[in-house]
Structures are given as C-alpha cells and as structure tokens.
Image (cartoon, rainbow, N blue to C red; front, side, top):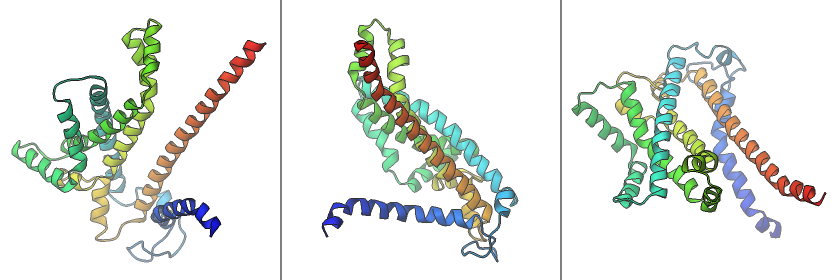
Length: 275
C-alpha cells in the first residue's frame, strides 16, 4: 500500500495515456488488414495493399489533399492575424481592450453547430458561393481564437528585462523585436500554428455546413462510413499521426539540446576566466 500511494499518480497517468492511444493503435493495426468484406472492423489477414496503393479508392487522396491545402492556408492567415492581435492585447493599452479579450474567447466557447449554421446563413445572405473559399474563411474564424490565446500566454510569460537590456545596449525597436522578442515568442507561435492546423484538418461540423459540394477528408470519412471505410483511410491516418509525432519529438529534442547548451555555457565561461 505504501508503494501504491507513492506511485499512484504515475500509474494513473500511464493508464490514461494507454486509454488515449488504444484507438490510434487499433487504426494503425487495421491499416495492415485485408478485410473480408467492406467493413474494416476486425482482423482478417495481413496485407500491405493499403500502403502500396494509397490512392486506390477514388476520392481518398483528393479529399486528403483538399484538407491539407485548406489547413495550411487557414493556419498561415490565422497565425499571422492572431499573433498580431496577441501582441496588441499584451503590449498596448487601448479603448475596448477588455471587450476584445472577451470576444476572442467567444468562438472557443460557441458550439461548432451554432458557428457553422451562423456562417452558412451569412454566406447565403451575401449570395457567396459555397466551396473552398467559404471553408477557409470559416476555419480562420475559429482558429484565430486559439492562436491568440496560445501566443498571448507566451508573451505574458516573457521576461521584460530581456528587452529592457537590449534597449539599454542601444538596440532600436526593430532590432529588439528581431533578435530578442521574436525568437523568444517563436515557440509559442509555432505551437499555435500546429494547433490551428490540427483543428482545421480535423474539423467536420463547420466544414460540412459551408463546404457545398467540396469534400474534405473528414467529410469523406463521414460519407464512406455508411458503406464501409476503406483501409487506405487508416493508412493515411497513421501517416498523419506519425508525422505529428515526429514533429513533436523533434521539437522536444531541439529544446533539450538548447537547454543543455545553455547549462554548459556558464561552466565554459568560468573555466576560460580562470585560465
């Protein structure tokens, strides 16, 4: 019992992680399956057909690339606008600042059904044709709130003495932003961009309302679920997960190396001063 009380938090954490990753593991295993029928729900036979022929089923790769394109464009625009809004909210005092802070959280708190239906009504009243452009606009609308919150948190945790030290060394505002502020805020901006892309790529409800005849990857999976999701979908989902995992691990490794380098620097400087 003493050992259990001492390691209870770690055991619960491992159990939660296992519970979260079991569905992903099932998808990865079934991507190597050759189903007996049209439903890929149980293991039948090992096969690499889905991996060697990812685009074998019509519409799979087209919808996948459509979601990638929409996600990239929406993420770039939302990251730029959201970062500027975060800088304005943290660094400047202006009339309506509190109201802006409140309005930023509304898209995050609003159910996607309400937002999707509202945007659809707006586009129909403006007689704007539904398609890729409307989906991109809709995705930017709800991604930008997450970007603002993420970058804002990074800015609020930034030590202002670093920028003050740069200004004391006669650096102009552009130099301070380029060499001090932006490198320190960049991890938060990149994290916000990754979060925004995942939200855009994963979105179904808002895209379904405003896509018209456009078929994104989630919409394709929803339609294919009625007649049997092809194994290629599992393979593509596995690729997306592995790419995301590689990006996260690379970022953690780079951060670890940078932290180790910073820890070694004072020791090296002290050694040189003694010599």
